[in-house]
Length: 142
Image (cartoon, rainbow, N blue to C red; front, side, top):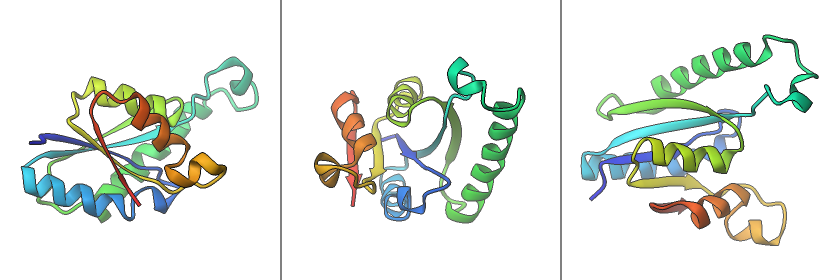
């Protein structure tokens, strides 16, 4: 039923994956699907934002995320899972949608972990946007 499963992971926020990762792994094993881990980093190149950071900050930040993502996969994803990783710049929900289209994803599995306002108690700001804008199935894990 599913061949490519996308799991957004915030490497600074364990709640973005602690419950969603086991679910995604089970689905990958059940359907012999590949797991696509996506990490989103802010776009530091925007003129308004970029002026506050050193010129090569975005490059250094990306290198740090690449290494952190590699360590995450090594420590958290079992060897029997076909896993691919990517790092996308931008807002989390837009990057998740963009990645799902680019990678031809069948299912997005993500956690609902942020609670800031009433609507966020149901899903969370990024999960809510992904659910509303994704063209594929989205599984929210609580």
